[in-house]
Length: 420
Image (cartoon, rainbow, N blue to C red):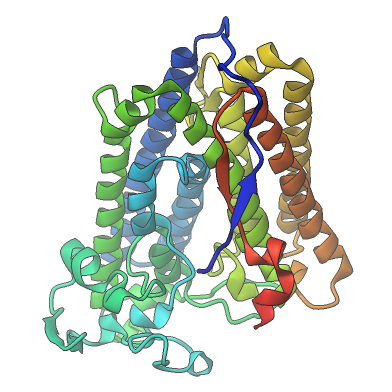
């Protein structure tokens, strides 16, 4: 996915960084504690999803499929709140594509509708259908996929042939295996994979039910393993925590880079504005399940968590401590107040999308050409995220930190370019 960079004008005329009563090290400790808790919750939720998947594969039924879907949606709540730790932390950025890469050419994994098409110039393996083919040739190498394992998915299939759309692992591969394709376009309705796609014997639909179940279990196992790794990286002796604490000003830069890049280029641009410009439901982040409104909402919450230094765990307990907000308020109370107002406005606008979607106005429908109400909802949140980013830039300047390059998006910086 091509992105441009938005340069945040964060240089100052200060000859020395301001001193603060709030300890920067304490702010960074809070940040790492929130990361550890949020990734830990993501791991817990993924284990619950793994258990639900096991039930579906062993004793398939309509109820088992719905329970697995519900577990997947619940697993997205803590994970999306971790995305604010991206962009500023190389350890997270190098890992993230294994668990949340999108969009994907789902024909790599399983059967697809005829309208999907086949191999393309960009991706020779867009319709490989590993589930239906236990043996195939990939990048000139014969592959024996008789047994579908986490190693096969992560080591051979994921980003096969160095094509980013060959997403074989993570939340969205599992989402596709639970919901199937959403063939409703900009109409209401998510994917409608039948539970019999996991059934035994003659009840099995669309063939290869045993291999489909094996893939689903292997992908779920891999998700748990990957989240165990990242939760460990933020533990007391973890590499990500150590990297953030090693240099206080660099650590603060990492916090603000994650906030600004997710707010602007990733969420406002690639995940929201682009879909409106193209009127394309394929640009939905959770496109198979129609859960995109929740993913957007909890991304926004994750940004606010980082700034306020607080995170509510899935068991209801609060993780909190000295925050970026405390530092900014000490340096310039007006800048802090402005950013908190912006963060709250963003959550209100994202909340409107969530409320509308839960009332039956699907995110797909909001992207339809000529749907003025849907466009107003989505672009209202986009505008709030852009305004929020400007206030994040002011916070960077107020803290006397180095210039930061936030992630950008052609959909915001060069809208005409997305049609070329």
